[in-house]
Length: 116
Image (cartoon, rainbow, N blue to C red; front, side, top):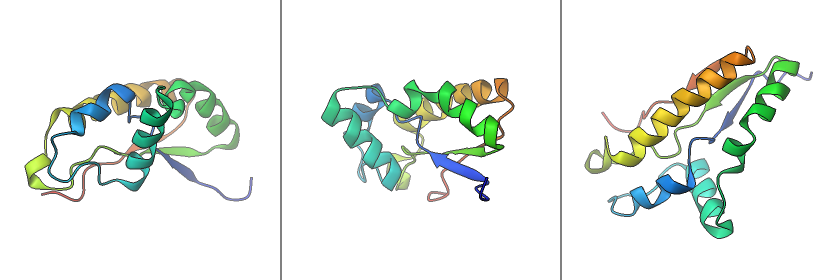
């Protein structure tokens, strides 16, 4: 109600994707992605944003807030580009977009802008 247009959330960083980044040269370079990965590993639980995504969509719909789905597993170097972690997360973000559309919530999927 006070002018928030969109939220950026890292709902696509799933517990099972975190080990896929272990052999990366630059690891997880997204601040939000690294925080979420650390939370998942520390608590041995799935990403709470992913688990509660439908509830988040209900809130966004009620206040006409769009979602920016952050690419928390984006590569930080050409060496790490197009790996399993990146594409797994992008697939999940696509699925979350379809769910958000069920609630008439607009979505932006962030893309890896750090690598050509």
